[in-house]
Image (tube, rainbow over all chains, first blue to last red; front, side):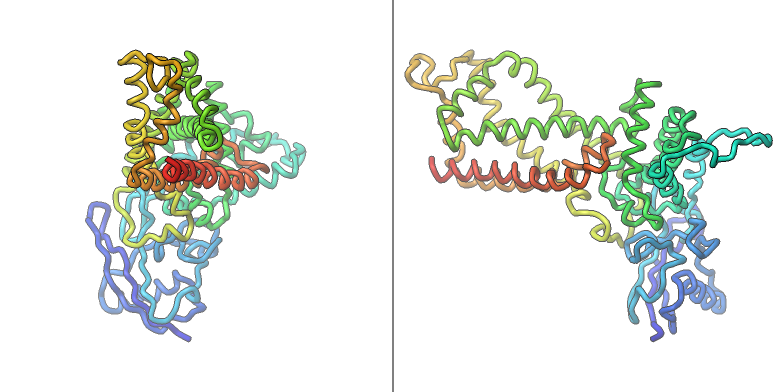
Length: 250
Length: 228
């Protein structure tokens, strides 16, 4: 059955605007639509009424790119588990519901416009050490030629599934980025290719994370629950170990 | 190694170390206090030993006070820093959907415990320091001029739990302690990097510790209130 909904959406003209919540009504929303398609319907309605459409981030719309964000009814990516906002279906809501839609909130994620936030702080953390230095001149050794313990390979792959959407930061009461950084540190720390630069990597990435103004992790576990890719808290513990060992060395 | 306390992970590690130390102290404190229920004489002897043994008085006691002050000060410092990391709050936040009440309210359970520590110091620690180091009576006796009068510790303990209001305050404080430990115990292990195949078992043990120790302290307070 199609649904009629009330939407409370954060509207903010630009980064310096104060912003406020604005109420909208949308009708005949199919439960099979994705949440972003529902917002498309709203925007079409706004454009037809010569009003400014709601700005929100999106790209692949299949849960891979990490662009769509949105804090929906008090949860990053909404009430479903293991999904991004583009994978969230309207069947999670009922006819007559009021849905509150806000941007991800963190000092390190300033609002650009409406529901769009600037997550380039994540890029700067990655630039600080989220890579391995490999000679790509044509003599690169086949990755499969280096034997890797199956358990380590699986854990590294799990960590590497982080899409950097920022749901961990948005969900954390302290706006901590430790699940993101923990995943990025772990995916390399577990593999022989990543061990060479491991000390500098963890020190530099954590320093950049702190410089960006993210909060301190207090192990509430909200990040793990809300992560669309199920990144585990084990990655934070591994980063802590890596960091403490690197601090002793450095 | 330099400047480790300036990093988020370093602060978290230090917070966890002080927490582990305090949890060990709590177990030791409980082990001595529970003796008062079973054997007043043994409780008196152990209390006198703890109150006069130089290693405890001049080394462990200052370390303990540093640990307590550090844990509280760092807790408040981290709370202020964390509040700065999100200056605009959500209009709607469903924290209960992804985390426990205890984990989100450590600052409030901690503040309640701090208030209790002040009361506890007023009740026991300040009078003890006054007797020993200001009055200069290290005898531990009820009447310092009469060796037959016996040790004063058990009597002082019972005397404190005569008033119902104090027992109620202690019970409420121990409930907050349990709430704090229910998150804090295994959180400390996660912070020092221990998250492995033993974590599930550790979480189970942490629940036993977090509920068992405060419940034991409640039992001791109520026992003395009913038996004074």
